[in-house]
Image 1 (cartoon, helix red, strand yellow):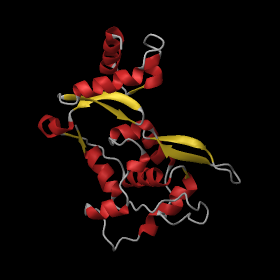
Image 2 (cartoon, one colour):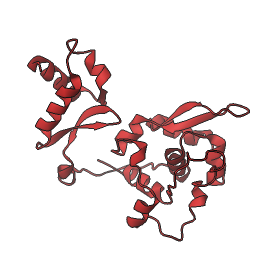
Image 3 (cartoon, helix red, strand yellow):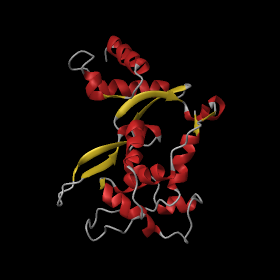
Image 4 (tube, one colour):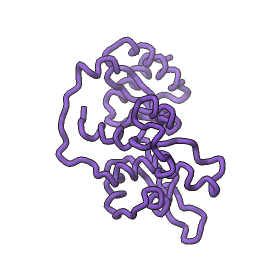
Length: 213
């Protein structure tokens, strides 16, 4: 492992405002450098420091150690909160992706304005994900890597399921999960729809928007 390559990778990660993937790092160092090995080595070096090297959605970045977050937290109240429609739309996309606009509206039981999706696009949390192979070929939407990074999860599989939400006290057995579409498209996409319930997942999302660290 070249010390110069290790220093360069460390500097790139430190200077970058966004997480960096291995493919990009390989273009910055000598050919043949085992970038992943360097990253794991750096991750091990930083694991006991105030700043840790973390990998989320296959991208690497330096972040404040999680055990210091409470001591370093600075609360800034955001005057304009994300609307209820936008929060519900984001939750539906997260748990049903890829999903079309009409499916989102069917799950919510109400139509919404184009501005709702535009807000999520501006935040970088939602992106187009191809077109559904049905008449009209409607656009489908999915969450982005920025969404994963913001909520500090490695993949969509890490989203809490209904049992975890219930254990956390966010929902109870009185909640009708069908309201949120968990079984709405079961016949259309058998085996694809997971048994996830996200009643009040909008509260979890809302919390991160009310206070910015």
